[in-house]
Each structure stands twice: as structure tokens, then as C-alpha cells.
Length: 468
Image (cartoon, rainbow, N blue to C red):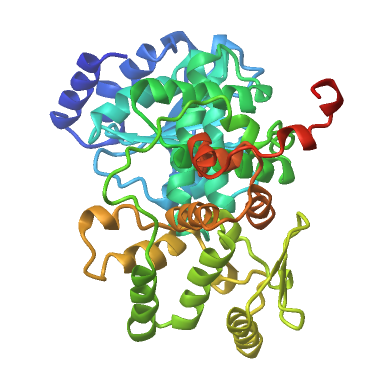
């Protein structure tokens, strides 16, 4: 559907002589449905049941004139109707009662596509797969095609777009992070719908996600960190869908982040005067700022110091659990087998934080948490970034330097300075859990050559007898 036709819809809507449903149908909706691939001979006006307003007729489209199959139901409201939750709930109940898979709710200006099969077990207001209006013509032009006969019934590609609202519902408590995750999931869903002629859930797998990311690199440049986050978002979403029974298989379960990212070539960051490792002075300023300006100063200090001491990445920091810490032994034990001996001062902060959590009767397995509604859960990545990055921005540091002072940069600084201070590659791997491939993003081949020359090559060579 081209922009010219969409502009016509908008013009017709703005010039309706009457605001009632029948005028909206007659002037806009019937013609629009034909343009979406539904011939008039498929239309039937059905009496609304008691769930709907009395004596009103709405449009049922029987695909291929086959009344034995569930129709596509279109409920048309007045031009000035707000399409509120009550209207959405009414339509969802009607779809559910009549076993209808798809429904559209519209006032001629806004168009909601509602699913009643895959999303039937979640609240009505969460079953909206597409929500477009003539206010945003670019988005309207992009998404109106998913209402089409080909996309909705013949090939069912629209089913890919069910994933974002599904994820939204199960993660509605993660308000601060869900926007980023949902953005990636929405883009990936639309990518799948655009390249496959038929819906098939086996297409939701690492290979197609890799192709999706490759398509993004054609448009713009992306950092490794961005793609790491994208991969983690999709993998966690597919894990959730499998656990909840919405996917038969999770093809990401056997996928390694390291192997996945190895298929991409990322441009190295351009080093300048602002990318030197984080300094002691900057760390001191941040810790002092926590003391005088933040409510959770001890928690915030502990988060920064653990990141600094153990070179934690954002994901590790977010997912630290209380039972990883053994204060009586001054140990931090990770599930992968790593054991890190803590200093007395750091162990003291850990002990006090755990003690405070218990005293406050906070029931949460995670070391760092936030309250979402009435329950506690692990702190969001956005909150961690805010605690570290945004507070750095208040310390009188130059704007150029502020841009690099983020949690991942602290980790990078620790690893680079450890290597420069004489730590072996083995030491750094045991501390960070990085693979040999992963450590290469922090320590370059040139770095190693600068520090090391091969000595005793003959005396220690395993095949020295052949050379002497």
C-alpha cells in the first residue's frame, strides 16, 4: 500500500460528514479492506451479540467465502471513539466467545490488530499485535501490510509479530529495560516476516538473527557491545517463550555468544585522548559523590568496587546472587567454577550489604535488586548504567570523557591495566571468565609482543632433540 493511498485515507477521515460507525465504514473501511486483499464478496455483516452494543452490525470476513473457517472480525467505532481498554476488552471477549483468531478494532484513524489464539491466555489489553494510526504515516505505511490477506491468512507472516507483545506481558515489571529489548524483538520479528513467505517458528534461530544483524550493519555501524546486548535480549526472550510453552524449541539454547559474535568484524574504536583507562582520581570522586549525594551509597560503592576488583561485565554484576558470596571465607564463587579471594575491606562491604538485606526482610536471591510493584527482583541494566554513568556525569568531568565512563569501560580498564602490571593471560582468564577469543578484544597481539619475547625456546621446546 503506497503513501498516496494512505494520504487519501487521512483526507477522507478528516472530511467525514458524519462521525458515526456506518459513515466510517462506508467512506473508509470497506475500500481499505479491499485494498488489503479482501474482496467484497467475502464480507458479511453479523449481528453483534450481547457482549457488544445492542443491534449493531460489524464486518465478518470469511476468507475465500469459506464459512466453515473462523472469520476475520472487524469492529468499527465512531470517528471520535478513543478505542480504550474497555473497547479492546469487548472485542477480545467476542473473539474468544466465537473462536475467532484475528480481530481489528478501528475508528478510521487508529487501527488495532488483536490476536486471540496464541495470546488468548493473557489479558485482553496485552493482545494487541499492531497499533498504528494516521498520526505517524511512516509507521502506518510500514505496518499496514500485516493486516493484509496474504500476511494474515495466506502465509501467516504476521504471526512473527506476536512475539513482542507476548514478551511485554511476561516482563511488564521490567519497565526500565523492556523498551530496548522490545525494540530489538520487534525489528527481528519484522525482519522474519519480510524474508519468509510462510510462518514457521523454526525460523526463529541464531542463523536468522545473525542475518538480521548483518542487514543492520549495511545501514550503520554497530559496536560489539551493542550486538552482545542484542544477542542476549533475543536469547533470553526465546528461553522465556520456550518455558511458557509458546515455542516448541529454543534454538538459542545451544548457541554460544562467543561463537555467534565471531561471525562479525567490528571496527576497532578510535583511540583518542579520552580513552585512557579509568584513573584512581575518577574512582575516588565517584565513591565520594556516592557518600554525599546518593541514598544507597554503600550499595552503590559495592557495585563499583566489585566491578573494579573482579572486572565484572554488566551482565555478571546484574546477575550476582547472594549465595555466590562466602563472607566467612572471604570468597566469591561463580557457578562456572571461578573462585575469587576478596580483600578484607571489600568482604566487609559484602557482609554488611547481605546483613542489611536480611534485616530489611527483602526476599530476593540477587545481590543487587530493585522493587517492582510489590516484589523484588534483580536490578535492571538501565539502573546500573544510571548509578555509574549518570553519576560520573555530575563530577565536573569533560563531556568527551563522560562518554567513555560506563560500566563496560571499567571492565576494559581493569583488564588492560592488569596486563600492563604483569598479570598473565591465564590470571586474567581465571578472574574474568573470558575465553581466549574473548580476551582478544581487550588485549591485542601488539600488546603481547611489547611485553613478551620468547626465551629458552630450544631448552623448553617439546621437540628440541630435532633441533640440537
